[in-house]
Length: 211
Image (cartoon, rainbow, N blue to C red; front, side, top):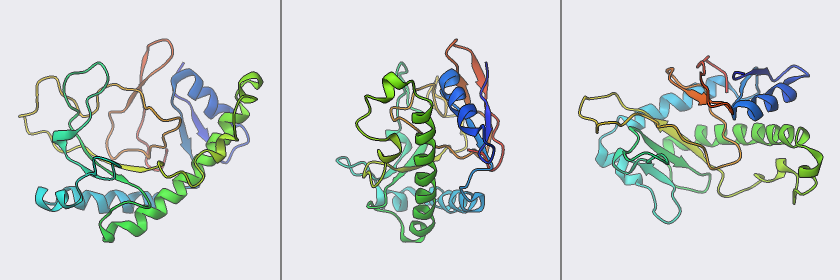
């Protein structure tokens, strides 16, 4: 059992992708319709943002009520079952939320492309859901995120280690996402691991262009 790679352009993509989700909670997509150059442009633009002084980044400090904006390392997440914060900072981008104007256009473009793909993938999940479960859905899964105000683009930044980090802290402790589906562009460095239903850990390659 291992994380499967589905070729979006092949007729068996939906079956392979959903089988991998069932066995490992994870799947890899290649030859998908999200523009890879756009992904790189967004990565590079936000990298520049994260290198700004804290005084500049904090102008977009997250709103405690609606959670859009910049989350610095000192308020980073603590994964369930852990006692120390992850070594990361991030930004919650919503189409309706605050964002540096120089970053808005391409971030919104990527958000829209990822959302369109997510609707397709949710359709795949529904297609491969057992009938007795599928008939209880209140609406088609692909429509759940159409114009949904809480769907977001999360930009993660893992800063270089300084040797002063809290004992036991890592960049992202093992965790489960709380949402139904997360689309994750391949990171700029390796390190991602996933655990299957038999509690075995697997490395996930960060092949450029994959999701």
